[in-house]
Image (cartoon, rainbow, N blue to C red; front, side, top):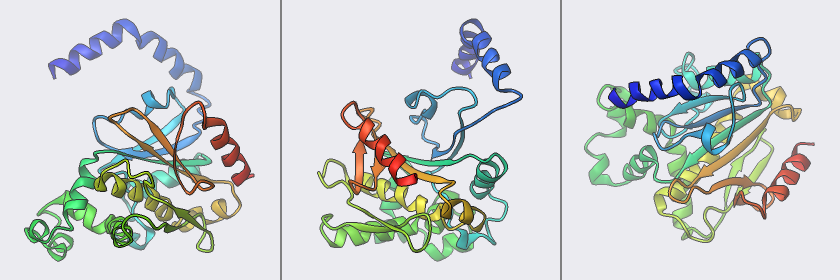
Length: 262
C-alpha cells in the first residue's frame, strides 16, 4: 500500500491533468477499437506494450487469458468473458478481438503440471469439477483449458513437428498452426501459444457473434508476448505460425490482415 499510495501521489503531480483531458475528449464519444483479452500476470501491461491510450480498448483479464467455450454456457451464463464479448462487440460494435498470451504464464505452467499423475492426483479432475472450493484455479483450468492441453498432447506425440488444426471464424473455416517451429521456447510456452490460439476457436463458438464473424464484420487475432525479451508475436495465418512484430515484418502482417478480412 505504501508503494501504491506514493504512486498515486506521483500520478497527481505528473500525469493526472493530461489524463483528465483525455477522459474529457472521449467522454461523449468513446470509440474503442478492440476487446483485448490477456492474463492477470503482473508483468503484463498491455497499454504499455501496445502504446494504446484512454478509450482505445476494452481490456479483460483472467488467469491464463481463457475464454470459456459456449458449451459451458448454462454454467457460464453470467460470467465475465462472454458478457465482455457481448458488451464490446454487440453493444459497442467493436470489430476486433485480440487474445494475448505470454511466456512463463503461471496459470499455464500449472495446466502443464496437471499432466503429471503424481501432481494431479493430489486433486482429481472429478473432484475439481464437483467441488470448486478445493482449488478455484485448478477448477478453472480443468474446466476451461483442457482443450488446450489436449492439443498440446497431440503436438507432443508428433515430436512437436506437425501442425495443429484450429477452427476459425466458422465451423467450416480452419487454420493451420505450426507451434514454435524453431524450438526457441519451453514446453510450457508452447502450451501457452496453443492456449492462445484455442481461445479464437472458443470465441467463435458464441451464437451472438455468429453473423458478425460470417460477414467479416468481426475479426479475431492472437498475440503472444515474450516477457523476457519484450518481443511480441502475431499469429499469421499465411505463415501458419506466430511471427515476430518488428520493422521487417510489420507491413507484411498489416497487408495480410487487410487481405484476409477484405
